[in-house]
Length: 254
Image 1 (spheres, one colour):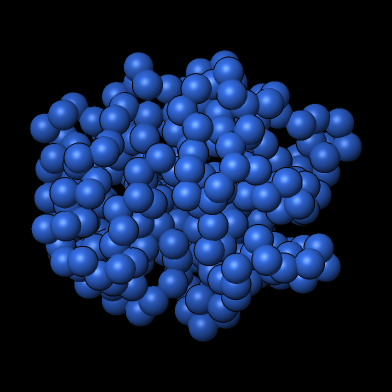
Image 2: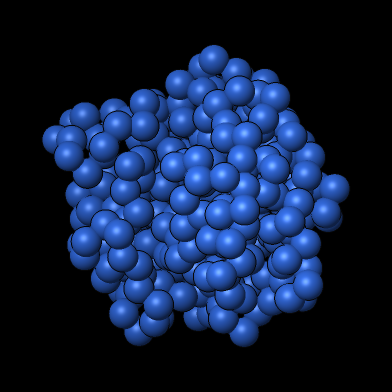
C-alpha cells in the first residue's frame, strides 16, 4: 500500500531505531512467500487475519496525513488486567492490536477469542518471548511457528501480524522466517510507552502523548497496572488531538 510508511531498511539497523521515510523501505516481498502467507492466514469469522497487500517487510507507522493511531500491546500477564485495558479502549470507542505470547495463550486460551470478539487485532509475539535476534535459525523458526500454531488452534487463523520478541525491529533472518511462517510484514512501532519499566501512569501518559503523531504505532504491554491506569488519559489525549485508536490492520490498509 502506497500510503503505509515502511522501515524495511531499518530492520538491519540497531534495534532501538526505526525509520520514518517510506523511501527508506523495500517493497513487500511477493512470490512464494506471499502465496504461503495467503494460504496460511486462512481466516475465520471475527478473525483479524486479512492480508494487507503491498506492504514492505517491516512497518513502524502508517500515513502521517491520516488522523488514526494504533495502540499495540505485548500480550501477557493476568487476564484481569488485560480485560481492564481492553474495556477502557472499547469504552472510548477504539480498537487495539494484541501481539500474544504463546505461553500466555497456553495459560489463558480464552483471551484469544476475547481479543477478537472485542473487534481487536490478534497477532504473534513468539512462543516464549526470548531474545529472538540472538537465536539460531531453527530456534527462531520454532518460536514463530509454535505461537502461530496456538493462534490457529484457538481462532482458526495465525493472525495478521508478527512482532519479534525482545527487539524493536526484526533481523533479516527473522524477517525471512516470519514471512515463511505466513507473516509477510513484521509490525514495529514508532512510539515506545516504556510501560514495561513500570515508571508510573503519569510517565506512561507523557511518553505516549509527547511522541504520538498521526499514523503512529504505539508499543504498550498488558499485565502492568500502570498501563491500565494510564489508558483513559491516553485515549482522552488522543481524542483531544482528533486522533482515533484503530487496529494495526485498519491503520495500514488505509
